[in-house]
Image 1 (tube, rainbow, N blue to C red):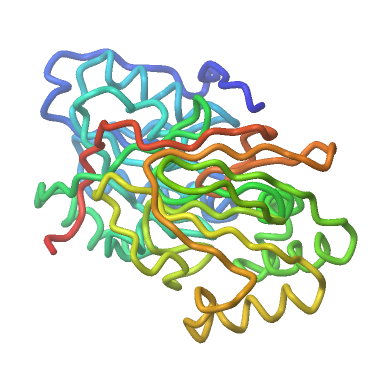
Image 2 (image 1 turned 180 degrees about the horizontal axis):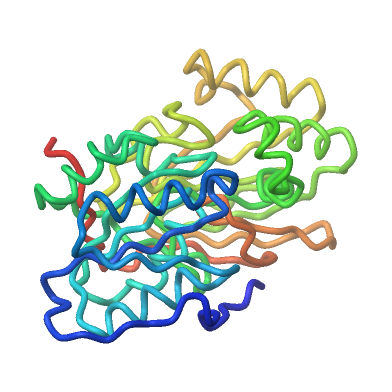
Length: 310
């Protein structure tokens, strides 16, 4: 399980009166490392009064977000990819602070869900300044919060196989490459899925959606609404090499939920346990979090996210 670290010395916190009306930007310089300095200057140029704090490593974004809440900031912006956003969400959970998005990462699925454009700093800042909030259900995987998606088994193994260099070289394609390697090398586990209001199911891997999009701006969870109090669940029964490419093709065509070896349903809470004995990882918002058993649930709380008006 990933441990949250305290901010490093290069992320020294500032305390100042009047933070309530200021915007704090938590910036992941590794989201585009070769352009990090230029991006930070561009972010600062958007608003001379904004406070920009870089992360120094895993866990810093969550710690900085918690500190921001303690210091009285009411608007906290995550500048990076989905991993940075997820850390900031875990730092803001339970507070009244609003979340703004400057999507700069390899994958910007949550921003796409809300209609926030990637790598358009000026437009994103206009959205933040406009102040329109979209309520988003806070979901939880065991004790870890997430807002967009989660998964058990195959997809978490694929996430674990992608490093920074792969993302730099191949972008989103790096996840497909890693997924193909996982399918070729690993025997699928047997999972039991127990959900409120449903009979138990078994499968090889499980996908959980709070929003519609997964892995790309493709509506994998077709009925999902990000503030409806429900999780959309997909249970896949088979996972051979040919099955993998069949699923991808059907997802692109939008016919995956009609497959006989795919189950889908909605629930506010489900648990996944391993029946086949091995360690099976789970991920949330594209970040490897831990190992099953895991319980996913809608917490009943919502996060206010600055987004274009619907």
